[in-house]
Length: 410
Image (cartoon, rainbow, N blue to C red; front, side, top):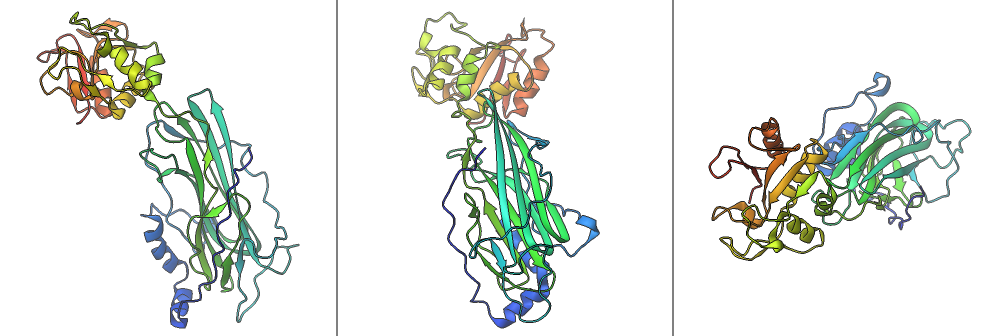
């Protein structure tokens, strides 16, 4: 799939403001100093990764990690995305890529066979493969590579950044690929893949691939500049360490769409037959505007759900809680329960019931049998708690003899 084009980031010039003493300290500290600085830039470090061929001289960055998200599963990368061989070193136009400066003393960098002597340069490449699976699921394979025309030490890691406007995890790392490191080489790649279930995860519609790089010359030659990147890529951070032997930078692919439709859990609940939504009130009160099904139909259409006209609060408009809706879906999609919902915001409940604020639902049938004596009751209640419910009652609790009540925090 073709990369989405974005404008290249402005050129990041040489670090001309650092004092001579500070430059000498940076050279002596090498990768360790850069690592300490980057902990603040990239966030908390995770456990260290093993060196390639056991060499401890390869530079380090804090590894990226991602907290588990509902509806996001990490997969084995597609074999078709994995490079079959190293990218060739190629002549690159002046003013592009990440280049070395001229060393004041010492040997020139050892060039890769066949590479031009000038300039000494590293070029990052980021690619992706987006594969829809029906209307609810999308698989994203992502790959980040760096190729240089000289030998050096390096570390790199690719990761996915959530960029969906309004998503709760917008800006966070959604998934992180296996990092690479080398101590005397010129090529490395990091590859990963995820499956996003758009019914359970509110993001994943817009993503960006990030690529952290730490590069260290073997002969002490300083890094000269970070210039224009291949089309579509951009800098996500400054180039740290210009004028020193160790450079670190974060690069992005530019934002791309995964093709998932807008997040609408109520629409999925409405259309799943295994989640039966009652179209009447168990009390017999005739109020079709506030039945369980109508609450979900209204919410799926972007309208408020309604409480019942005979309730403690009368007829009011409420917004159904997103975590509750996600929990309702998860009970079926992840745990395999088939169940009947008798009421959500409608009906008559206790005076301060969470039903009246759209944060509770009641169930009277699980897997084809009524709740009283149902062997699935405890598993269903435990699943409600696992998905965030903090008030789980019935059967046997006062007022909940024949149904299970699951409610989310106010």
